[in-house]
Amino acid sequence: MAEDWFQKNLQMWEQFTSQYTDMMFKTVERTMQQSQAFRGQIDKAVEAAVAAQTQATLQTLQALQRQVEALSVKIDELIKSTEQK
Image (cartoon, rainbow, N blue to C red; front, side, top):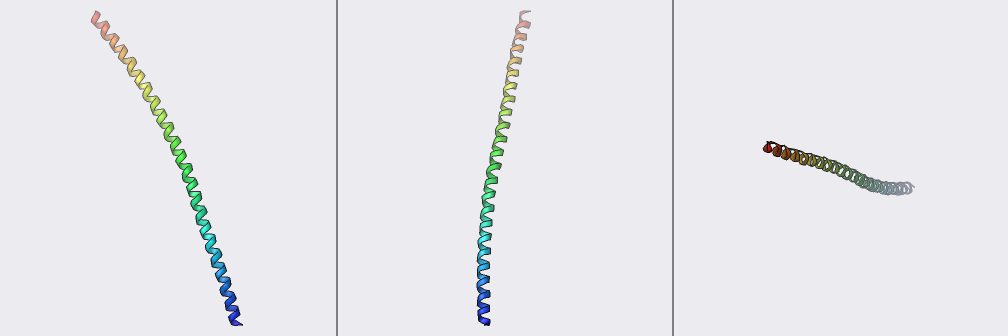
C-alpha cells in the first residue's frame, strides 16, 4: 500500500514537472517571439525617424545652397557695378 502511494505520488510529480517544463518552454518561446516583434517595430520607427531627419537636413542644405547662390549673384553684380564707376 505504501508502495502504491509512493508510485502514485511519483507519477503525479513527473506529470507536474513535465507540464511545468512545457509551460516554461512555451513561455520563453512566446517571450522571444514578442521580443522579435517589438524589435521589428523599433527598427521601423528608427528607420522612419532617420529618413525624416535626413529629408529635413537635405531640404535645409538645399535652402542654404540657394541662399549662397543668390548672394554670389548679388556680390558679382556689386563688383561689376563698382568696376563701372
